[in-house]
Length: 284
Image 1 (cartoon, rainbow, N blue to C red):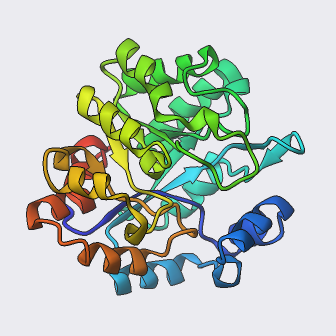
Image 2: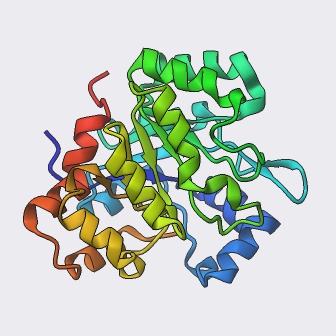
């Protein structure tokens, strides 16, 4: 069993992907400028990423075949195909795994592509970014994907909470996952990005539903709300998953900051890898 950190949500890290999606895309470039991260953007070839992961002690990383929609410009943005992720992940077996990005407008064509991605490419879940589509995750267009996840035995990972991108944040309210968890008790749901600024909503959902987990991606640990740190260190330790939303949060800085949170050893192990190893299937 892997005993090194598992990053449950990141982006395709190749030089071409980083340049196209974060440096040259006008909308995302402004987002990274706003948070002072544009100058640190850097892509990695496959050999470079392997060396990078070895150096920082990273175990596994989930890379989203991201499907986003620009709310302002009404166009695709950050569009990464499952095949692009598969091309990288097959060169890094046991280290990089894909998440199928859901475009709710692809309907059953997308559901078929999801099934292929799991069965042929070894993908371990879906990723839903509801903000740009302006369709909350409880919208009917997503439900065929959730049903297929149950059939395939894979989790659904949601980018929730406020979005740094220029899109309506309301679609990321964690409470929008409540009805999904009620309708699909067999579906493992991961509410990422800490749910901020609705962190207590996210904690409430993870406490209420056995099938709901809370992920930390996109927020550096030094900014985690005290309520979430307490949840992670006590009664919610079995429901927490670590993530980066890389390249937004750098792995080394996140891991170093976690060391400063004074987490109990068992809680830290569960956060960093044990809970992920429990809910994601890496043996396909």
